[in-house]
Length: 74
Image (cartoon, rainbow, N blue to C red; front, side, top):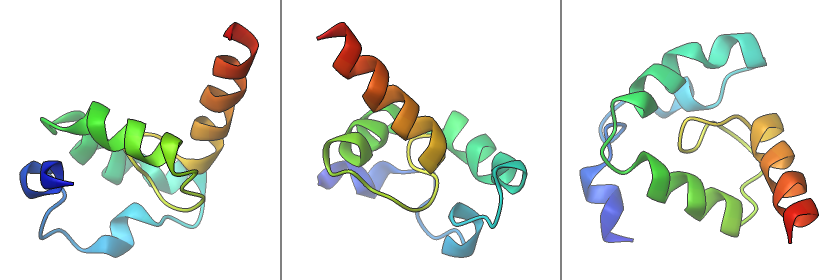
């Protein structure tokens, strides 16, 4: 998981990435959008079924939707 060393969120308050609601996730998503390893982070979260927080610019709800779409496409 060397990609984490290059993450834009490194050193940022982790609470930002665990918003109470979908609407509060915008700050975390903005950090992710500027991150060089955003796609790798998202794939890690999808592969490990991360249930909480914003990973790779996607909330828990968005990641669940992605997993469902991938299942349908398979």
